[in-house]
Amino acid sequence: MVKLGHEVVGIDVDAAKIDLLSRGEATFFEPALPELLREAVQSGRLTFSTDPAAVRGSTVHFVSVGTPQKAGSYAADLTYVDAAVEGLLPHLAAGDIVVGKSTVPVGTAERLAAMIEPSGAILAWNPEFLREGFAVKDTISPDRLVYGLPEDPRESEKARTALDEVYAQALAAGTPLVATDYATAELVKVAANAFLATKISFINAMAEVSEAAGADVTQLADAIGYDARIGRRFLNAGAGFGGGCLPKDIRAFTARAEELGRGEALNFLKEVDAINLRRRDRVVQLVVEALGGSAFNKKVAVLGLAFKPDSDDIRDSPSLDVAVRLNGLGARVVATDPEAIANSQRMHPQLVFGTTDEALRDADAVVLVTEWDEYRTLDPVAAGQVVASRLVIDGRNCLDSEAWRDAGWKYVGLGRK
Ligand code: UGA
Image (cartoon, rainbow, N blue to C red; front, top):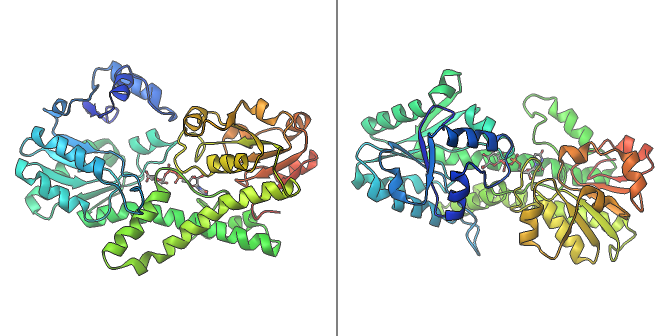
């Protein structure tokens, strides 16, 4: 937001985070963020505080807190959103705009609008589509903007004008804008993530069938991807989707549809979830099979722990899950990741972590589960010299199978020849 020309104060309840951020230090790994953050803090236009009163004087208030899956349920936990809005209430001035960015069940904005109404502030809903690993780029030049605006035309106009000012740079660059009502804006977000999840599970279902039929899912994806109506992106079969968004968003979406009496409409998302979870089982099964039926006491190098490359996020990570399961089967797992070891270690201190070299050394099997560049570009000849056995399970179908086979490896992909 500073880069977009604004003066910003960031509020969080976590004092340790606020401390680090105030010193210009990012609290997670995200390419290009550290430089940008330092620059913004040094400019004096970005400050941080744990005190909600620090929002006074701001005219636009973004609510961007998390909505994780509720314990013991598929529904979203709105505790943090409610707490953030309640924390804002005493400090809002008439005419201020509160902008919801959190991913919420449809209907939440209407409820929050009623909560803030007595303050004279106006609510808008402005879902976020950034991808981890590309967060800076996606924020500065988003591929679209969506405004969920109030029904009252005067309020709607005020909210729209404020958002147009916030996003003036992106709008001037021609970013498409959809201005709509609260419910549509809330639904756009979960519908987009549900579609992406469905696309991934579709290709993973094709991988299951390809495997049984002796076909190759990567070539299949290339071939159907040439059809512009289908497109090749998000058609990479492998260990499946994870992260803090897709898995919990499709679950919260089904829970909300059930509350709305339309559970049937989203039943297919349960299948999308089931296909996705089967992928992790399949990776583990393939490792065990390739090791001759048991992983016990076998040294397994697990390459990748983050749910995707260029991130240190391990929330619902298929890669970490695979490492934990193999470890549970008695394999001597050495797991590695360029950025996600510290987070993984906190959550699973029972695992052994190391560098790529330490993981590969004397390994009986190598399992690639997060397609970081440094793993995609591993030299099969050099790697072949340090392992005990040239066996690679490519959980992301991202290696050049021919090059690995030529270097003497047994190559196992997912639905891939
Ligand atoms: C996702 C959406 O892509 C963003 O648009 C959205 O803003 C964000 O969630 C959110 O709701 O905040 P993100 O969670 O960063 O972004 O990750 P994705 O790039 O969507 O990848 C999700 C998972 O799908 C990863 O585990 C990735 O490895 C997996 N994936 C992706 C595949 O298995 N195959 C593919 O072809 C693509």
